[in-house]
Length: 139
Image (cartoon, one colour):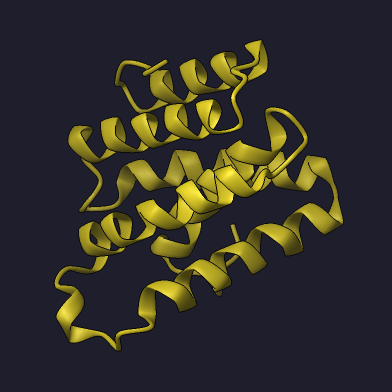
């Protein structure tokens, strides 16, 4: 797991990676949906947004996208490895609970539907992640 990223970046990495590896495309609709979820993720992890500059959400979105892009440029295996490690380690963060896990699984379900087609690989990946986090899949 890359140390130069915080848990907002890593959580968004999960969303970007999931959107890409399940159908080998990161559609604009998926990117827009991830952007719409960033505020919620940031608030859960870091608390009150008023303590941060107004452009913090945009900056986190850009940083997380660069994180995902950097890893996927290396190889698909590297994306899968990073994704597995982040998904496993997120469970041990003090702000990560079943409600947050359930929300993330819901977000991933929305991402799966964002391009208009839900593939079997998206369903399988979502179920696998939901099982890891001990929540029910949303599709």
